[in-house]
Image (cartoon, rainbow, N blue to C red; front, top):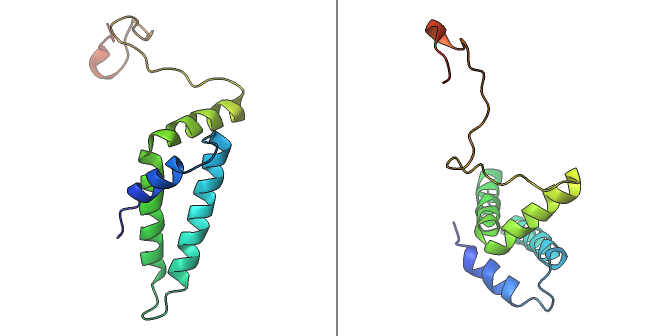
Length: 110
């Protein structure tokens, strides 16, 4: 299995306009090119499991790249119309839970 992270990083760094849309297009081209290249291998041909494994390795490299986090955030914001909530800082706020019997043995959450 190849390490795709250096390729992803180099391709993103080489973008003329490093925008979310540009990165999305780049990632789609990379996915298509990888599958075409893998399916074109004939000596010996790769199994579907091997192709899937390589595709997942590429997806992992894309996910690990810092620019992918911005794309994922933008995509969720666009699809829902709202921003994703930040993680709850437990030192500042605690989630509201019911105070009386919940769980086994009549234990309280508090």
